[in-house]
Image (cartoon, rainbow, N blue to C red; front, side, top):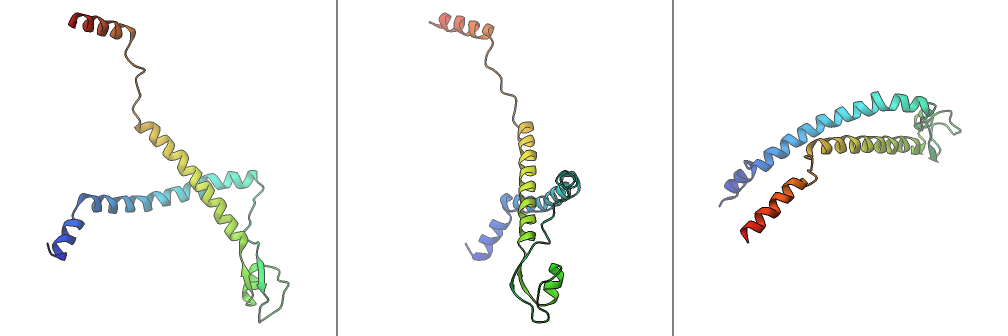
Length: 139
């Protein structure tokens, strides 16, 4: 089998098409989850926590060549050419990730509950009795 034929066979299999659909839907789903977190969950959470925002926190590794510190804001430090570590932005990103992952966990948990069929408790006492009668008649 030539490389071209093998690739054609691979590309036209159902798994590749399913993967492509999954990626496209996943991107759309990501936008939905992002909106859920940013527009629905974060506003009340920010209100309850007193509008906590770590994005302005930074650490200066090297003073700027244009102007020496201290700098009033991170933007001033960047404008002066300072080398900075934006640990506050990283902290915000980690918090957002935890919120998004927990939200997705809750969502997937609910979807799985809807997908799982209701498991019967087992045969009733009447069915058990009839089964015993049938088995004894067979003997």
